[in-house]
Length: 106
Image (cartoon, rainbow, N blue to C red; front, side):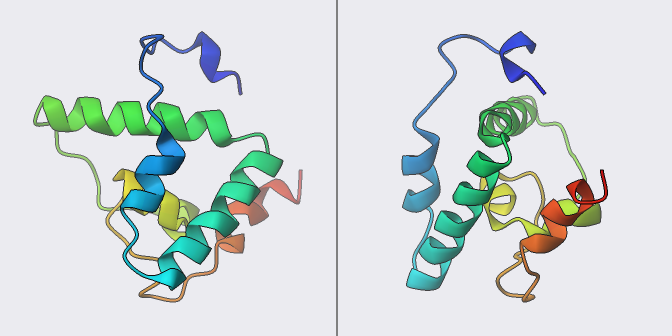
């Protein structure tokens, strides 16, 4: 995946880490964000988070409705914060490993 080739404005790379931690109100949330960011980075998927933030912001700005969540993406609290889905994986005790396990079978 090379998000640099996706049609996203060059100046649309806000400080995503600052945004994510700014949305956290508990230590549990901050710990989960830290864990997930490490996994996104180690799996080469950090840039995709910027793309998802841009997509969600664009949908919101244009009053487009999208799904509440499906599949393994609901295991990601970071994607919940960004707004990709509305499922709080901390509240429902969904481990982040559910999101990344699909890559293990290659």
